Length: 68
Image (cartoon, rainbow, N blue to C red; front, side):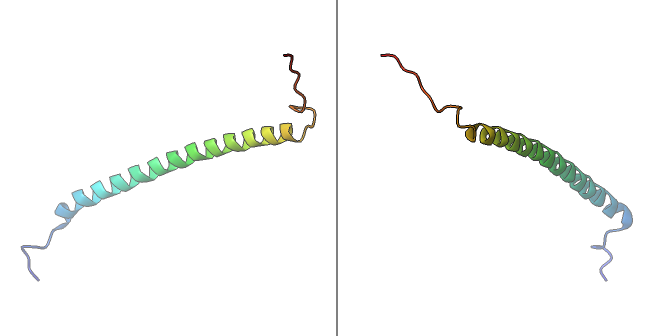
């Protein structure tokens, strides 16, 4: 084993801590992104429900009065 190329625990701890911090940050950002997407999806479903409610109501938008 080549002792010169082997890294000891102190030399490995900083890169490992940095990698762990980057992983934690990435997971938190992914979580926030998922929350945002869930909220957008809920808004879209609510809007679609309202649109469907209006579309099955035959009196809404079925008559147009024009004067020329």
